[in-house]
Image (cartoon, rainbow, N blue to C red; front, side, top):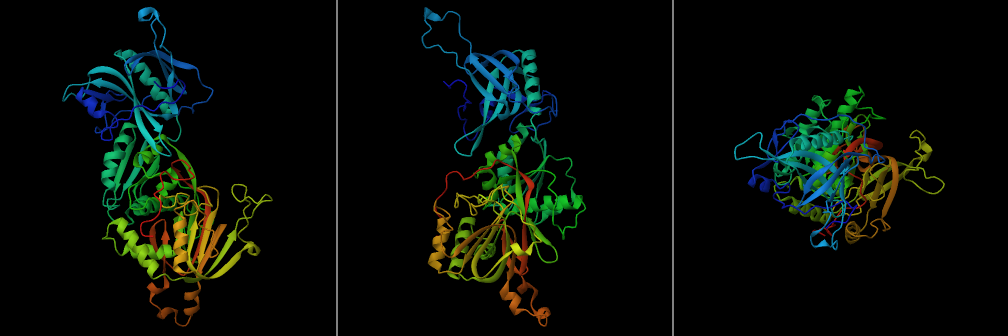
Length: 558
């Protein structure tokens, strides 16, 4: 028995059949939408939307009952009440219990918040091969429930009633309420990277994501990318006005490419010069990230967990948050939009891993880290950065005052031998770093974390790396410095001092570039790069979290 007045967690269905489809099929049952067409996890959704689209958001004070009726819930007859805020039910008690005793009888009310409901279907019993009609069994309500930590789960509530008129009236009112919630997408452009992590992205989408989209009456236009840069090319060309959001199914590299494409497209539509962007415009539509790659730091950061159903339900429920984005530029042009970057150890390890793509992903990463540690060497470069001014209380989060970039007096400059330089606009949560690679920043506080690791011994550097997997402060080393900044300029002094105007043209062009790790994607860039943060430049589907679920401990290669 559930406690009254508490949001319930319904009995878990089997992982292979979370919606109870197999059981319904065995009984000849089917779901139908507003036009009476059957709808299930494997069927196509063709029903028209019913009810008031664009209805105003549900108000907290709106508790006035809209409908009241009798349905079977489980094995009990219940008094069911629908308001704009919640769907509640309580068992109907007989006036005179059997035996004349009231002992053990309670009138407990249970309920689910309507904001947690993502779909409603009419349920019918049909014979094998029957596509339409059938005996009406009642209404099935599909609910998004929060489980342990940051995980979300889909569940069902079956309201049994054989009256057609009664069920259609309830169905109509339930649909009207659902259509009134803002930010819930009805049309999505989906990019699937078939080569992500053991080539499982397509299977993950079709088996776990697509059925939930169909159940929520979301139309998905799916493109399976054929080569690197394919999604970027299409985003520059396609009409995004017919979509409420864009979804990336793959790893960090795929998500980075799609985010970059969305932001480039926004600049093009606003007729901005993409090579001279001081204040870029926001992306037109939100981006959803389904984790299906060998690295999924972006999905971890926005969802707090690497879980396909959780990421999918955040998209369906329209959970949107604004996120800061960086621009990476050379002295002459824009190089990339991105969320995080590493120069030095982090980029060299990635470059080595990319040369061994034939290896399994976990082995490849461990091999690359160990090999890069074995040949550990620093980069000699100069870092110029513009810190964020602290207020009188020393706070530098949302109360920060932004310094003007043209005020050269506020710029700071450090130079020397650095093993690694990290510049991150988001915390970069993952199982190996439960507090984040950059725990001193947030998703949308308008700041970047600049973390520099000066040259030190290999054992000391390994100690620093291991700290990321623990609760200890990874910055508590004399060779590590961390700053909160809004702009950074990175210049390789080694290349600057060695190349002169006289011999510049005689240098191999490939030698002028350095590897950068941008959101897990390898980039080859010139020796001088400027990084700026732009607050709340893109909306991502998900909810802000401070730590990930179930941290794994330490990296196996260390």
